[in-house]
Length: 194
Picture 1: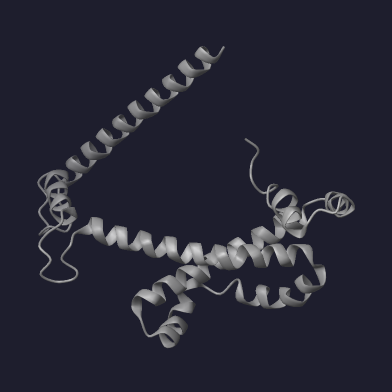
Picture 2: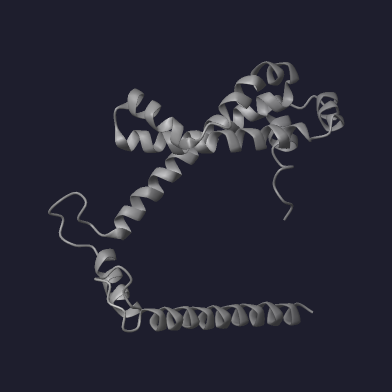
């Protein structure tokens, strides 16, 4: 039974990979046909010159200037900013979401602030971040932090508030510590069972 399921998964992966290759070849062929004999000064180049230009841009070059490092290193720096901003948002939003999800009075008191600040566009936080931090790197992390904060916070509050109060009452009856109640009852429900 497991062999049949494994063969089916392998066959599905092979079909998916083959379909991707066919779609990529069709895309490149259509691109080549559309740009054949059309010279616009490099605005819409055929696939081959575009590919060679992309490989030149992505390769690391000499570091004569800070921006002369290739696309890969710029992408890596951006991913580091995203990881830092998202990580900081998770560190702030998850404990706050656990608190707001378990205490209705605190949630009711802070909910108006959350509802006013939540729909603010992440780009609207950019001038505030620049004014407060006066640093482009820190401002980028701040904008990612603000964009991630509300999503994590609201989903944590929702996940915690969906936990049956019977489980919490049972944990109190069994004299579970607050840490055990949090880790064993409040945190697991949002995650899928393995």
